Length: 470
Image (tube, rainbow, N blue to C red; front, top):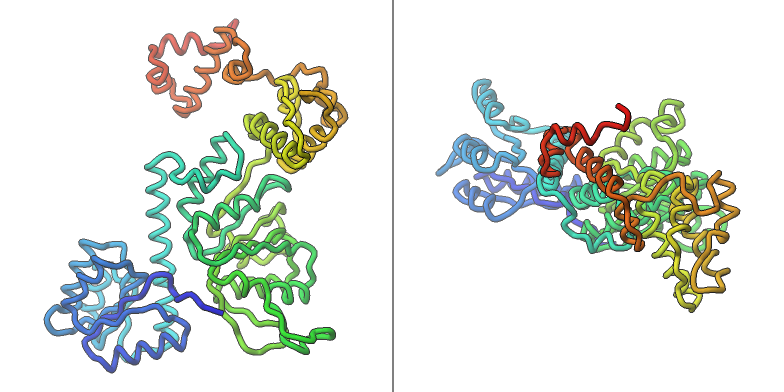
C-alpha cells in the first residue's frame, strides 16, 4: 500500500558537513521518519522557512557564513512557533544555556545516540502539531461562526451547541491525533465523524467499523487482516480495514466495549502507526486519521479497570461530545420536516404536512433513542398517513410511553419566533420575555451588556426582567 510521508510537514536539517547530513538521512529513514529536507548552507535557511512549513528544525551551531546562534535569534524573532533541536559538537555549558534561553526544545551533543535523537525528534514533531492546533483553535475562537457550512449540510440542526461543535471540527480536522466522539446512541456520532473526514480534506477513504462485541481474534482479523494459514479456514491473504483506510479516516464505533488485548493493539496503532496482520511477524505501518466513538462512560470504565488509562488519555487528545436530542428541542421541527420529506421520497408519495400541534407534542418527549428514534417514528407516521397531514394520533402511543400530553397541549410552550413561523401572532409580553432572555444569554447574564444589546437602559431592563409579584 502507498504510505504517506511522516511527519505531515517536513523536518529541516541544517549542517554544513555533507557526511553528517547523509548520516541523518539514513538514520531517520531506518526509523520511519521519511519527510525531511537537508540544507548544507546556512544562508538559505531563512528563505526556506519563509516559503515552507516545517514540523521541526534540526540545527548545527558552528557553520560558515551564518552561525547557528545567529540563525536562532532571527528564527525566534520572526517564527517563534518553530520547534528547534540543536545538534552540535560543542559541550559548552554556557552555549547550551544560551540556546535554551532562545527557546530551543532540545540540545544534543555529537555523536548523538540514535534512540535519543529519534525520540527527541518525535516529541518535537508532536509539540509542533500541538502549537499549530492551538493556533487554529484561537483563530476560530476569535472568528465566530462556521467557515465551511457546506461540509455539515448532512447534519440538520439549528442548535448553537451543534454549531460550536462544527467550529471545533474545522479547527482540529487536519490533526494527526485521534479524536474521541462521545454521546448517547442515536445522536449522530457517525455523521460527525464523516464531517471530520470531509473537513480534514483527506485523500483516502472513510472506513467505518463497529467493534462492539468483537473478540480479540475477530478484532485483529477485521482491522489488521491475515496471512494465508493464519488460522483454520484462512485459505488466502486478506487485507484488513486499517489498510483500506490508509491516507483516509478509520472510524471505530463502540470503542468502549473493546477487550483488554484489543485495547493494547489499538494503543500501539495510535502511538506508533504500526500493526501486525494475523499470522505475520512483519510489521505494517499506516498514516490515517483515527476517530473513535462510544456511548459508554470511558472515565468510569477506566476507574473500574475495564479500560486502559493510557489508551483513554491517548484518545482524549481531541474530544467531541454530541448533546442528546432532549437538550436541543429547537432541532425537532427541522428534523421532523426533513425526515417527513425523506420518508415521502423513499415511499414515492407526496410529503404530508406536520401541524404545529404535532411538533409541540414531540418537543415534550425525551427521546431515549435520540435522532434515530425520531427518524423511525416519522417514517412510520408517513407510511401510515392517508391524508395531507400527519395528526397527533400518529404519535399517541409513543407520547403515552414518554408521559407526554397527546391532546396537542404542550407543557413546553412554543417560543414567540416559532409561533410566528407557524402563522401565529405571539403576545407582546411573550416577545419581550423572549428577547430579554436571549440578550441575557448572549451577554453571560451581564445586565449592562444585555441592556446595550436591546437598546434600553439598565434600569428598564432590571425592572422588566423582574418576575411578576417580585
